[in-house]
Structure formats: structure tokens, C-alpha cells
Image (cartoon, rainbow, N blue to C red; front, side, top):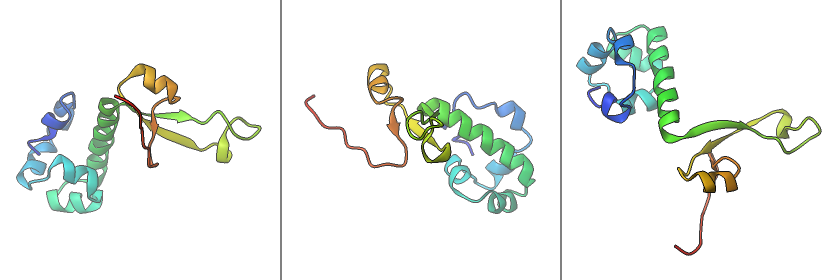
Length: 119
């Protein structure tokens, strides 16, 4: 758990100070938090599932903001203005405002995207 503030420097650790010692004691890393099942983590670290879920929600939100991942509604499609009955796309920012604008918000997550051209 010692890597949490290195991975997400603006994580509100004070709000979760009652959980962090147990996570550290049981060698739970940030990667474990993001990839393992919350119930399994709860058993491993001997923490309440509800509290651990709250921590995970904040961690994901902070990571999304740090990485520039956002949710944009699809405006093209059927008559209601949304494709697939109101589905949403996730975009990953390229960290270049001009390129993000040209790509209508960034690179769509969940798709294989190849960008080619001269340097």
C-alpha cells in the first residue's frame, strides 16, 4: 500500500486513514486494489467491504482525472441523438488539446486505435 500516494499523489489519505494500515500490513498494493475482487481484498485485509468499495471508488475517480479519462455522450446516431439507445463512450485524452478536439474528445477506450503519420 505504500505506493498509493506515489501512484495517485492527490489521493485523500486522511479520509481513509483507518483502512490504510490494514492494507499495508497485508501487503495490498494499488495494483491489487484495481485488479482484484473487492470481497477477496476485504477478506485478505480484514476490512469491511462497504468501506473498501468507497476507497476504490475514490481511487478510480482520481486515476481517471489524472489520466484524462472522461465519459462523453454519443451525439450522433438515432433520432434521440444517441447511438445504441443512449450508450456512452469512454475517451482517453492524448494530453494534446488540439488532437483531442480533432478526435472528438480523445481516443475511444475499448477499441484498438492506430495513429500513423509523419513525426
